[in-house]
Length: 634
Image (cartoon, rainbow, N blue to C red; front, side, top):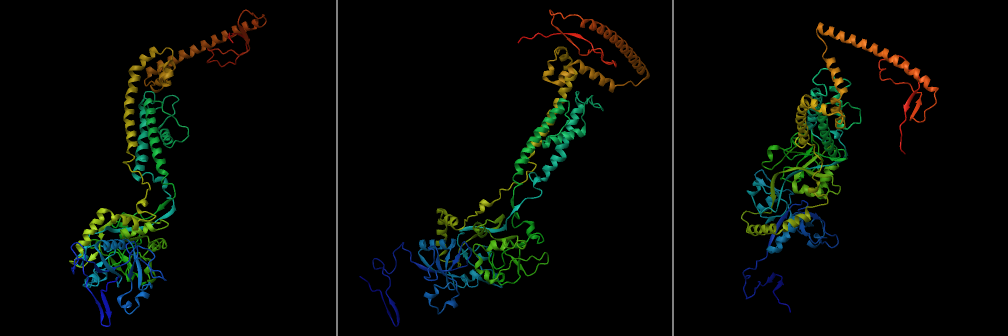
């Protein structure tokens, strides 16, 4: 059953008013009245994307897209709307973060909307005492709201009202990565300059001088004398050779010190070398591999951005904070140049000519109008190496484009600057502002905004995963533990030096009385030598060598002692000759006698090794000697 609510005549449409339950001409309380809004936008992925409709059906290919007008009002007048819907020159399909958010507002606040693109194609700045772009559409009454990634700033807030920001943004820098590069100085990069200077100019010098100084002070070493002890090959240069060999683990011949303290100091230096090599080799692996190289800028305030000789830069043009103007698309050689004092007002300046370094960038043409999607930024930077090194733009847009790069060659660097937010713009004192603000806060609290961000802004190359894990050179603070180890070793060696002197002055003479069997030699060769007779002789010889007579009386006594020593040697030689003659005679008679089998002995033809023949110069005479056999039990 149908109810007749109106009639169409030649005079027009005659339709009845809506009658609500109860016969009331107005809706009951709590039921909002549906209204229509005229909404303008400007495309910028991922907030507003433009996709042509299907050529045959004229419908949008995705359910998340809505139809939006891209042609001016004058161009669509008198055109069949049914046919115009299929023509991408008049209508296109809009999708993106802001479109999804707009549809959510429309469902919750119960309103319909007409969506069209701003005709002049700019965001809106105040020029020549008038506004242009999106702000002008609001002021002229052509639109009830702006839905896109328009930034909130103090200048625009004087002309229009903004909703609660739905996302924070700022100004960021994107650069291209170059792979396959190994720095020629990579072997020096594990440590910074200060650490290398501390190792080469301080640690090595301290270790070498300390080892030699302790050896010079040690009683078993130089013992504070100008000449080294007997058969002791050790000097300052040999100490440096020892230090370098220990530091780099070189398998070379080195001369070791004799003193306990010098040896202990050598072990301390060896511990330092172990720590140094462990840290160096562990950190070296991160620098000796093929790695990415890029301009690691700290942000907008990086000094390289204000020195055109060293860096080519492209910033956003002047008609808005983040937009591509018709001047950039017209093909003219216009160069956008950042001006440091302009960031407080969040504006930029375009110069036609720059005197220094003539920065020439990729120039936009009219064919690039549709390049504001996924690949336009990558083409600008990666395709023009040597022309464009960095790009300054809206931070969230750059993060999105970096994430959408299939080859992951783009990277955002530095910190964001001029932090602000995106919001929907409305006329001053708009009756819809309060309802939109209330819903915007609700969407933030329940996570709807965050879910839309994850859906639209994240890509394959996630920006947060591209934060470089490249190793930085270890500074002096990170390497301080090794230097503390070396310093503590030097202090402990000083203590051991004092103990060594106490041993030689007070302890050694008491140990010498108890060391009858030389058991201390098993504990330490140096200690056993210092307690033995031979060691005492060597010490006496060194004492005579280093303490020669310096007066005639001492020289006379020394000559007398030497003369008596020579006479004693002559007597000893005569006695050796006499004993040798007797032994030869007895050996001749023993050869002709039969062997006595009751005795354990053998006859040998080996020459006699007389212990008294130390000073004899006569040749050894062959003789026969009986040697006792050694009984063995098998």
